[in-house]
Image (cartoon, rainbow, N blue to C red; front, side, top):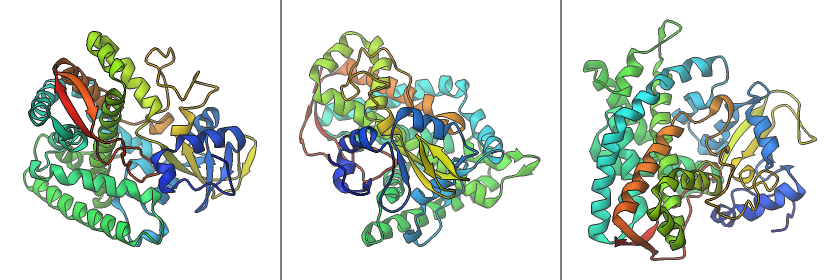
Length: 399
């Protein structure tokens, strides 16, 4: 893909397969201006530098992804800790960090196992399924729904809410239908979470929402705005990454039957497989930052106030860091990567997402002998910041 003027990260053909553009950027324009304003940073070392310097590169830049000027209304997700800088970020992160500790994973493992067994039974009975709808969405929706004490009847709505908000990062002013759909999702989420908060105030329970209502930061309870931001953050973060990781993993196994056979023969390779999926098809493709002062990245001067697209998906295909970076390699020696971010904004739910993916694959590989794609034409969620399949039509073959 040849560069012609400022690259447009939001083009539909780029979102279907962004990697050729990323490769061109790394070779010829590793720090460059892009359409709709801002600068793209595509090489591993430069991406890491931006993420490690929150004082110079503020997380306020993410506001453009979730609340672009043409959206026409506020988005409570923008009041979550994802957009906070130190010191407030540290205080708010501590609240959720306690809940996502090792004890949570140990406590959740049996219920995740049971849910995976139930979902696997369902897909084996139906054989021809949309894996996103039938497995990849219900699993994390059940996990995060139970943690937050949410209404199970609404789990099917969670995916639309998450996809709509993720799509804002690739929206344009003329996308009137999409923008109307996202506004509707945000309003629906706000109404629902207002009801949840009111119920928990009357009847506290053993769930994250009740914990947040009881929480204190510097001796003060969270404001209504902070509470709403936390609920948006917890639901969306708990869903999007895991749905996309599960879908991409299954897509990879359906395309490479020899890989599926190898994992079935040696399930100790599953964690390594998950790490390579995270590198090869990272669920989080990009983050955004805002320059708080004039800065230099990769030898390029960025003026104060510049929006920076931090291309994680490109960094993880950087040939200087990963040999044959465009090849999926289960035997790759280097497994550490930036798939869940870096620095103070490293994803709090990273280990939970890995746990869900590991258990899901262990259960599936024990009972599924093969996977076949029912369509080669797959559509990816139109988002600059996340990468996930809208649907994954597959045929499931019993072992």
